[in-house]
Image (cartoon, rainbow, N blue to C red):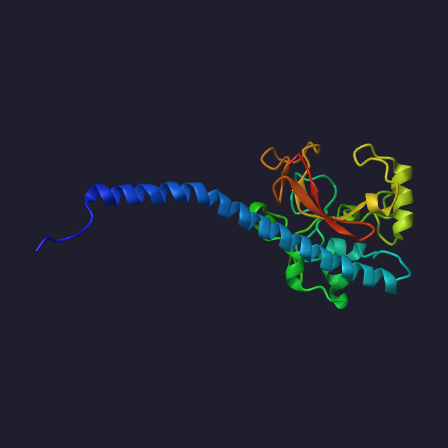
Length: 221
């Protein structure tokens, strides 16, 4: 009887084909995984925005003023010495909005957790999103921070401040409230290894001051 089987050359050819297909498809799988995480983060931010709207409705349309939590929350204030005198992490907001239905997981972006150190504040869960307009506990409240202000007052203060780095906002839809973790290349004290880096490639998830959430392409990342 003649034994039927594969020759060594045939096996090597099959293995080579599988290796080529894997090399071609692996980046596609990574992109699909990253896109799914980006979509999850945007969905989480929409949930946070809904809770924020409920808070405003119960607080005469005034945003929280929890500068006390800004300095006392677990994880500390300004845990990295090379960062400017501000801390955009939003652990305080998780505490404030917890009664309005936000869950632990919505405050955590797995892309940020895997890319950056010193971005997580551990409160009721892991929080690693930025809220730049609640970044300092100064007294009085800085003109470009939002503690205790109505959205309209916040926009008016930004217009008076007229910071060329953010432009002149025409209204609440032009002003950012929440964003993914990112490290601006324009801040000199940011370490070179982090300059221009963001949680997601080619843009950021953002919630604007009118509480709509969107993906914003950004050529800097």
